[in-house]
Length: 146
Ligand SMILES: [Cu+2]
Figure 1 (cartoon, rainbow, N blue to C red):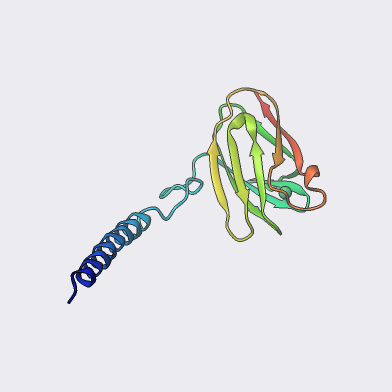
Figure 2 (figure 1 turned 90 degrees about the vertical axis):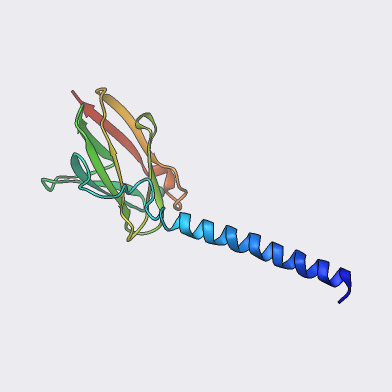
């Protein structure tokens, strides 16, 4: 065997060892990271549950007591809420900038986010994922009562 061929074989084996190590390390790490941040592991979601459905082109908020509101979310200050966000059609993205809340609305994949508003007032919310002709109408207000 020529030394050039031997060198190439060693080089190929070394690269294969490095790539195999990287693949195994990545896969074992990823297997521990299956939940995303919006769906923390374990336990009941904290606070009051509100179901949120995005559709072309509005947001619908359904409270525990059956009350349904469109493009308006009314909350009470210093209460913890968990919103469960989904979509009836295309992907939307609920954004409440002053709360630091942004969550994708994906049909068949409810995403949860918990937050506790602590300052009464009126805030804006909007869809920040282009979702069709009247995307710009998917905006509303969040009213936080004292
Ligand atoms: Cu939208």
